Length: 180
Image (tube, rainbow, N blue to C red; front, side, top):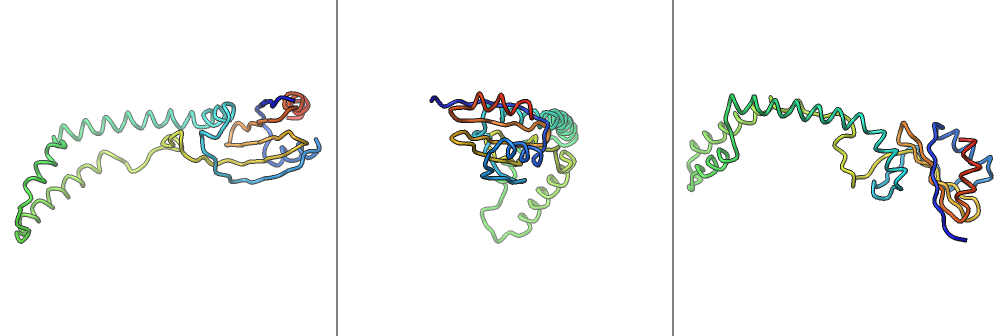
């Protein structure tokens, strides 16, 4: 038979999902509350589930970036410092390293800039928003098998999803849907 892939979203937690799969006669191959998985290794349904979970975090991150840009604008109005200023300061470094006074003056300029620039960032940003889509994600997972069909349950937090693969994936999905 031809390999099939089906999926369904559920509101069932890890423990409930495990019980349902066992009642359906499936062998639990793996169950963990903390698994690392690469975003690119997720099916489209699993990717959608993860994106749905982090949507609010991304929205909060956009708000954070807006605030950060405003802080940068205000900072640069007060102290017009650019990368050209840094390059100029580096060029001012004396060739003779025995001149400690010039190094001390330059070091003080850098320290002053770094202290001033702390105003720009408050040292953090919300949630998952900085995760790039090629990074490793955390989730709960169950992998179960029934004959030559496999079920992978991934729970990212708010939208658990089951991916069913095998020659009978469609019919297995039909029998599982009513229970999930």
